[in-house]
Length: 501
Image (cartoon, rainbow, N blue to C red; front, top):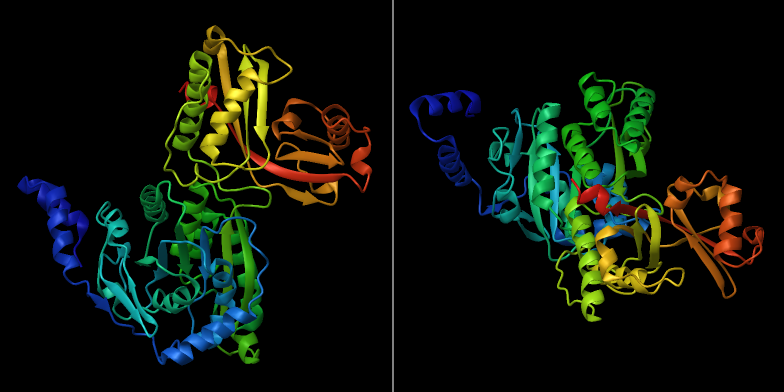
């Protein structure tokens, strides 16, 4: 192993540019990456015969019955023991992503057989399983490798490792037309996990077709009762997505995850990208699987978890996407007021191409000057913003059409909505988080989430005013079983917030 710190000092002393030497070092060590990485766990952790392996995974997936995902899944935390022990649990995660259009799958596993510090990223080639070869996404890997002294490629980290490999046959049965980024993490500081999460975030950028899998088992020990206690505590940190608490709990050995540093990195990354919800899909341990719960029997815990967008919400837009939508809205209004035409716009960002409901609100000197939107996405988001901006400026019946001379005094606010979700009780409404849409017959009305933060209403007052003043219904119509009530969330942002900085 090369000592990066001592190497850097020597390079600086000799006047050689460190970046050049890292480039040469990266080229030299990448030569040790095999064109095809042969499996080393086949026949031990899972069947070597492709027919038997395929049928086994099909059986696992057929039996798995996870609750439907609440949003688009960004990451899975899955076990990596022999399929007879943990395959049924792992299948809960794979069932949820089956046939989804992921193009790059990042698999982060721990090192069981080779001690090293930092992160090893496999640079190129393919990984072979009995079901075929999976290509490495070398373009993605290049965005990670050697960007930090802790992140490199060490072939020995993969030579005998199973934590990444056991995920591959499941992926081959669940997905099509994708590439992998195999990663093995050695001993890592919290700072290393944070740095690596930032690099992953930069490499992912605006892509919505990337899946992260953190490969880990849980408790390892000889006490079934202790296993339940430790794993319950560990799962509580996962549910709260408490990356820092998880890291220090692992260091203090009150929590157990053999792939803990990969999980910590995944949680940091997920939160950075706006994902705020982790669901435990299934849990078991080897004592339950074998039926041997006697003290002194080796026991390992297994969990399947999914990170997605929480109920009634979706992954948030990043800062650049928000700025782009605000500029689209302002330019659309200006063009329309000058020419009477909607501007032609081209957009390639996958999230802005999704059909998503949205509202555009205009304020002039702090006072409402127009607000119009669509609850349901009927066209790509960027076109919805263009059209709703124009309508808010000239078609809100409460105000006279906006004049071009006024535009400089107008501040724009955008609310991008999650899908509507019908509820059976207003107890499910979280004021300030949820917007509400009510409908009874041909009458309907909507309040955006921010209405509750702008007015000191109780939930009952909120609903009564919505029914009476927005929907034209009786104030207590929300109590009528014939009244449909839907909730949604909104990602709300304004020019004042983003463009004035």
